[in-house]
Length: 397
Image 1 (cartoon, one colour):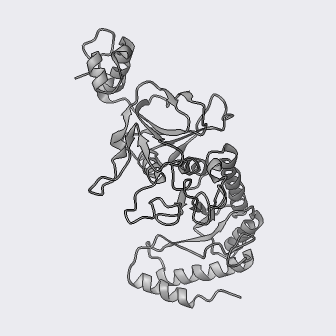
Image 2: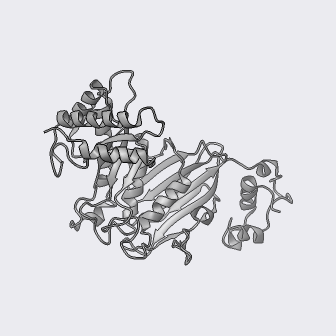
Image 3: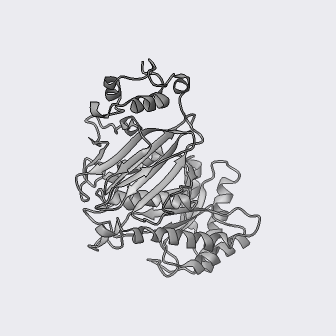
């Protein structure tokens, strides 16, 4: 039968009266189509009930600029394209389109599946979200009336493996490969939001399910993404045309930042091959590198440029941006089973004004280059290295 909104109305009115800030309300969880859990509501029934919710929220919030968004259906995606087509058509025709359409994805399968570990680094498995995201987007956007804005599309829930994840996989270093790749893939597809299952709980939380709530590796992967990757998605041109699926590359710029930087995320899924990559970003210069490794795929310890990432005794998160190392040559090497962020920024005024010709007093000495992290040993000290450092960073003072 139809949804009875009486309890929901009481909660919504209380929320509004208390002036609680709510970003969005979601209409149910995994209730629709073939992959619903507690029910398998048709698109017709769900659209009718969703319009009831829309009218209810409108009657309470009115034109309040703080009116929460409404999102739906938050269901596991299993190819139910026809359901999404029909739901989109109906809600637009009835005047109650959602602000966002959400979907769930658990690429690694069930938590009891021993193959979940290998799946987290399998390019064929990770590429499924490219296909699923494209199919879902087409099912939605192709049924939005001409001239109407399409809803946002969100990854409403993803935790790697369903049924509370898998210990040694979704709470360990190997989980960061599918997690970060999902950010890159879905950002390129135009999705603006990715919701992780969960902050604390099971074996797939960003924090360990212990009294200390120690961060799992995915917490630091997320911290690095949020800190270094801008919101403007850029295309990546690869010399191999993307043929090697074990090597993943994504780039975002930060148009809102005064620095105008661009960041590459590179992921090496191979357990045996290193990749040497020449990076370029127009007239920007490689300023800093952030390479993440671990003791093992099932380890909960991760290292940023060789330094252990951990919470301080005072409970403070590490300042990951300050842990970058000098950018150096734009030819970078990524070891097997690692990932890295490579940040490009415009040349500084001082570097443009410096005299970086051979023999100039503005060039650093070998000791100065080592102190600044531009080179590691005196054997690496060349005139070219000093000139390159000067062009990027200005005179050696």
